[in-house]
Image 1 (tube, rainbow, N blue to C red):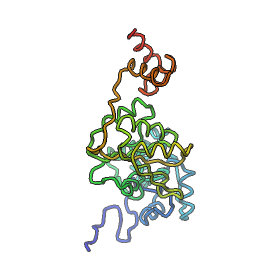
Image 2: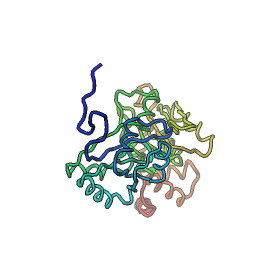
Image 3: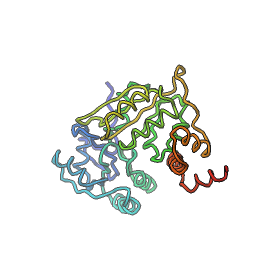
Image 4: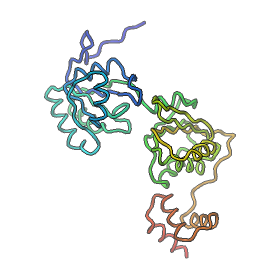
Length: 296
């Protein structure tokens, strides 16, 4: 077996030996899902920049790590990134961690990483747990070609537009989703991609209540609808189109057509239908109303 070459970031005993920004992956649930290298780095750096110091402190306390921590999150990264790079240029060894998983994956980190690179500061990844990769490999969907797109848009109109764009993609699609939006998102999947499209909902991956729901979109939606409230971290995976599946009807109706459709199918009044269409399309109610009025 070929030995891995030693990097410039470690000496012969594996200790941190150069000032650098270390991107340290932390557990996404089970505290045992952290590498020996990650634990060593967290012990030996001068400072740990955390998305939430309280959350990271639980991990540090569990492993007896006493390294100083500082907050680095989406609300202060504009100023904090510059401060940390100044420290790095001065010879500091800094680890960047998020609440769970790999820094920079749908979490704060990109601004600091990009700034460190521009200032020629070494950036060293310390790999480990990743929610979307764990969900993907256990999903049963093809892994030879996939696309991870982070969180789906919160507004239904924007979400449907994105789903339409991947309708004929030859890749497995992987997304994060908030639990309170999951049913609405699965409903959009059914309408845009069809109820027969295969999906996987991975919930609480590596945690105590880990669960994988595999099946056709309509079936999974029905199953989750019966549960009521859905909790936990969610990864949604969507299979590529199967040529044997019946295609969903095109959702690209005009605002006017969609309002009329809702009024007819749901026996809704004009105001209710306009409000629903505005929410679906991710547009203001006044914009939907203008288009509706122009049709009269």
